[in-house]
Each structure stands twice: as C-alpha cells, then as structure tokens.
Image (cartoon, rainbow, N blue to C red):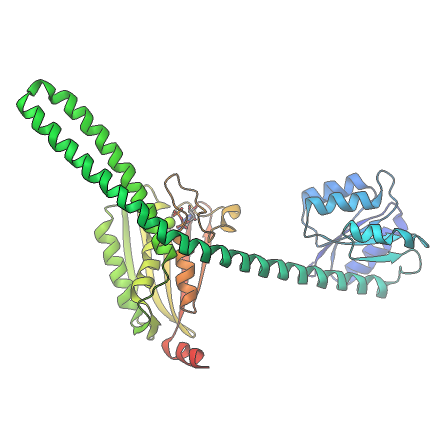
Amino acid sequence: MGRGRVLVVDDDELITDSFRLVLEAEGYGVETVGSAHLALAAAEEAEWDLAFVDLVLPDTDGLELLRQLRARRPGLAAVVITGHGSGLRGFAARDAGAYAFLEKPGDMTPEKILTVLANALARRQAEQELEAARQQVAMSEKLSTLGSLVSGVAHEIRTPLTYVTNNLFLVRQRLDQAARVQPELREMVDEVVQYGKAALDGVARINRLVEDLRRFARRDETGPSEADLRDVVGVAVDLFRATRRGRVDVRADLRSVPAVLLDTGQVQQVVLNLLTNAAEAMPSGGVVRVATRTVSGGGEIEVEDHGSGIAPEVQAQLFHPFFTTKAEGTGLGLSICQRIVEAHGGKIRFDSRLGRGTTFYVFLPAGEARRSELSA
Ligand code: ADP
Ligand code: MG
C-alpha cells in the first residue's frame, strides 16, 4: 500500500470491482463504496490520496459529493467518472475540484485508469509542494516585518517598565520609613509590600517577554568564527546550571567535534532555549542529557529529556513564532533556535514520544565544508 490510498465511489459493482483489481495489482490501497454518504463516512475515517467519483450516485449528485469531500479534505485529488456523452458537465466538474475524467465504458481499461491516476497523484504532489513553498515565503515575510517592528517596540516598553520598578522601590522605602515612626502602620505596610511584589512579578514577566522578542528580532550578529562546539555547549550548560535552581539535573557528555564556523553567543542561546524547554517539560524534575558528537559533515548537539513529550497536533506547530502551550510561555524559544541554526547552514529536528520524553538534535556543518560552500 506504499503507493497511495484510493477511494472508489460508484454504485455499479462491476465498475468498482474492476477498479479494485487494477489498482490492487499495482500496489495501491483501495476501498470501494456505493453511495455518497458512505464516501463521506470513509473520508471522515481515513486519509485518502485520491477518489474516483461517479457523477451519478443513488443518494447525491457526484459533483456535490466532490465538493463536500474537498471541503473536508482539501488535499484530496479527485477523478470524475462520467457516462458516455456527458461532456457538457466537464466544466462543472473542474469547478468542483476534479483533476481529470474517465468516461464509461470506453476509458475503463487498466492502462487508462493507471495513467489518469498517476497523473492526478503527480499533480496533487506538485500542488502540495507549491503550497508548502508559499507558506514558507509567507512565514519569512511575516518574520522580517515582525523583526523590525519588535526591536523598536521592545525599547519603548522597557523604558516605562524601569519607571514602574524604580517607583515601586521608592514607595516601599517610604512606607518602611513611615512604619518605623508609627509602628501601628506595620501591618498595613506589609500588606502593601506584598501587592508591590506581585506587581514586580508582572514586570519581570513582561521583561522576559521583551527579552525573548528582542532576541527573536535581532539581526546583528557578531559574526561567525571557528570554534570548538564542545566548549560552546559546555559554557551554555554551566550558564544554565548557574541560573536555574530547578530540579533538573543536567548531565553533559561532550565529545570532541570538528571545528565549526559559528556565532558563539547564538549557539549558546540555542542550547539554553532547548535546556529551558527540557526543564519545563519535567516540572517534577529529572535528568536532562546534553551531548555533542561528530557526525558526517559536521557536529551534532543533542538535548534529551524525559518529560511530557509532544502531542502530534502540537508537533506541527512547534517552530511557529508565538506558538506555546504554556501559561507563561512566549512561544519564541524554538523559532529563535530554528532561525539561528538555519543561519549557520544547519538543521534542527526532534524525536518525541508522548509521556516518554523528547530529544532535540542540532546539526551544524563543519567549518571547512561551510567555508567552501560559502565561497562556491
Ligand atoms: P515556549 O517555551 O515559550 O512555550 P518554545 O518555542 O520554546 O516556546 O516552545 C513551543 C512549544 O513547544 C512549548 O510551549 C511546548 O508545548 C513545546 N515544547 C518545546 N520543547 C519541548 C520539550 N522538550 N518537551 C515537550 N514540549 C516541548
Ligand atoms: Mg521555550
């Protein structure tokens, strides 16, 4: 069934049987149904690559069925089976999303069926590739507009936040002085100080968000230099251990790696973001493993946790900016990682099992390979 899954919708069993024979012999997965409502049920239940749909069905018009199928599964390719001489309806069928036609009975030969099927599947794949490319372009446009917007806004936000912090500090100082002179005020002052602390927590959160946004938007790079990935990752790990009094225990297994052309600060940022996510995926603690190793063409960093894992529907959106499942997340960590890794000519990928944990892999090309690539 490696070749694709095909749904055949026709109430004539002679037709559906011949489709089944021809398609199964070629290694396609086939299901046949005799009515529109059964076809819709089949489309609900499973993914199909292509549907052959008879124009005349016992319950619904074939074109109407096609519209409903395509509304539910926009990626479904469809071929309409028409009776002899119904050429006039061809235009309507194209509008409903049909890729091609087969005319009964003349076109019901194995060669014809297989050719139409192969062409329709090829066209579907081309459409999907085009759509993916279009999305990629739209995303990078969005990111670059966002980038210039963000660096300006971040600065404007930080300044008033400093006033808030400084003034809260002064309020506290004055209240403390007052309570020293008038001890009966102490209880009230302590209460107000608690409110102030809550306000400062809010400020800290905004600061974190702004800091993430700035990193996300940053275009100025200190520039790459040839570095030992082992050292760079080692420093990031030390930094993480020093700043995070979490319950995670980071174990580093850093093997020697060929020299990589990299921007030290940025690659450390990648490791820190991955470590932060790993720790956040294990709220009750555990071990996070960090490793570096030589792989073909460069070096690889691996960050492995035994946390929550990532649900399939979340996986698709993981690298989208602002996508987060956390109440206090910014959703920028992984898109920053991706941007940095790609700027280095590298790749980031992950493996995850729900309830078991997640491993992120960052590949960075070796310095030599990278230089010849740049000068080519
Ligand atoms: P944030 O951490 O602010 O949510 P990220 O871009 O760093 O933003 O991550 C996006 C989302 O990806 C997270 O909200 C989380 O759902 C998921 N995620 C990332 N890393 C892991 C991990 N190691 N384990 C489980 N989920 C993860
Ligand atoms: Mg994160």
